[in-house]
Image 1 (spheres, rainbow, N blue to C red):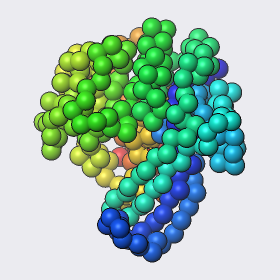
Image 2 (image 1 turned 60 degrees about the vertical axis):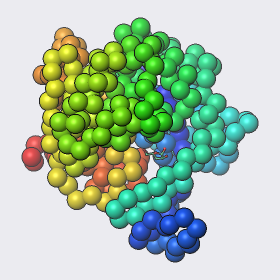
Image 3 (image 1 turned 90 degrees about the vertical axis):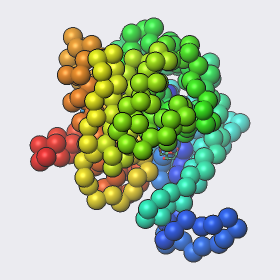
Image 4 (image 1 turned 135 degrees about the vertical axis):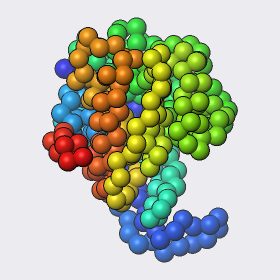
Length: 317
Ligand code: RIB
């Protein structure tokens, strides 16, 4: 039975590599094209599974060619796909990604991911007996995410919510939802969207994290790429630097971080409370190392490191 549960999106990523992003109305010649399994939920599931966690994915694909490939890929990565359903009505979710050496643009077409609802929550709850962590993101309907968080939190699981893609600017998370979030992990942009605070440095990030925690969330971690990350709990705030690495492809970096965080929290001494910085500091270091390794490789799921690679990386630093 799974230790890490993921309820979320499964997409086929259609990635065009370009020298720079096109302007509106402009046609560019691409340098390369790849069709690779992605979706924030599936990427996080693969990240956790590669780190040696027993992982299960609750989600939806289409009854089409992409759906078969996406489901087979998760299965090959040792992710339990017994709660991954093939929809008859909708095609598999797709993400149209334009990737330049310095930036990327993503258009997500939800397809079957948009159908995730009550029936999927019924598929999720039987896993609660053995699981320690539930990972959620915002690429599937928000009411389903909110209900999943409440059910899991009340069942004693640690609920990690990655609020990606970012909600509308200045639109806060509902108070009821915040009550059931153990750890919120926005990146810099998402934290700005949720708080309206412009984040230029660690001080700004801590202010935003404290504001979010004030809404009832136990722990808030804001990731800021090369600027590292900050963490706020009832025991105060701290920042950790990023690991300097040569960046090849940042797609899925946040997913790597969340998968790494889930693995670290699962393996932590159960006697430690979630807001204990003796638990949070090493967990953040571990998650940052997972993300650092992921950005040195191309692709999303294919870039996720193994537990042995992360251990070697941390030892070498
Ligand atoms: O976080 C990266 C993911 O976002 C991609 O794999 C793509 O599917 C989009 O959902």
